[in-house]
Length: 138
Image (cartoon, rainbow, N blue to C red; front, top):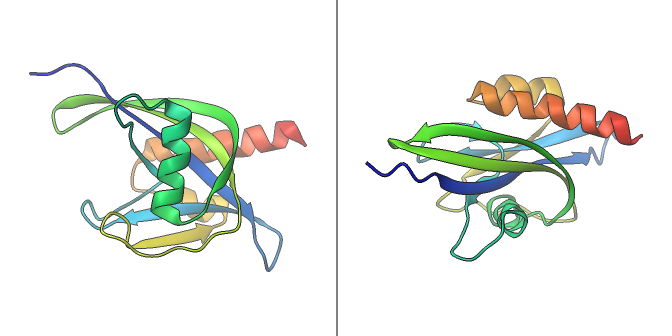
């Protein structure tokens, strides 16, 4: 058994609605797992977590992002191995989603809707952290 953690990184991606100005959070749907989550992925060899988080957001959503503050790190088991995912808040910049083999859909949802749609409860807690961090910077 390999107990070396798989290292990954991602972001809670947000924007202001172009229609209402309300806060929206981007969720990605991964057909392989049929789940809704925040954009994230494994670090490439020699890659730091910040670079990986921003790369994964752009690859999975089509939106480059401006990095915000670091949020909690998730620790769980995936495929029998420990996994560690570092998260940051990130504000979406201008972009366009194109479905791919990893992510076939994205949704921009208000925070309460995002919390309900997320598959894993630990991901919903990151929404609360994002809201608290944005509230503290205003």
